[in-house]
Length: 97
Image (cartoon, rainbow, N blue to C red; front, side, top):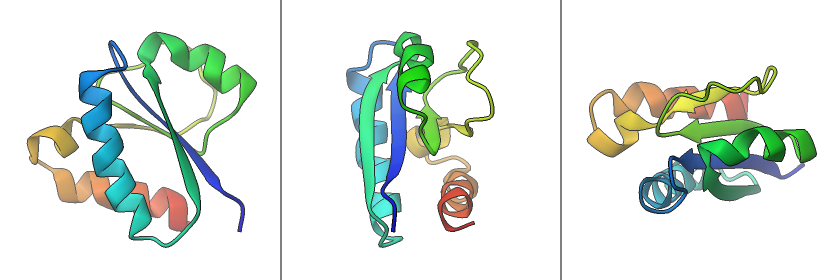
């Protein structure tokens, strides 16, 4: 099975994206599929997508740049716990579907 690529990002690429990275790793690990997560800033996303298209981007904030048809999930619910189940279901749908 091909390894899935995820970008996890926030404004600075340090604090919030580190928390998202851990939570997304836990979610995707449960799916038993190979994956790689790259942590970065929102500003880095257009260049990263241009050089290596991910299967999913999980961001703490809106991404205003044009990144084509790459699926983007706002990860705020993973940070707050409010609506987390819906976000987890979306991530699973993208990777299993």
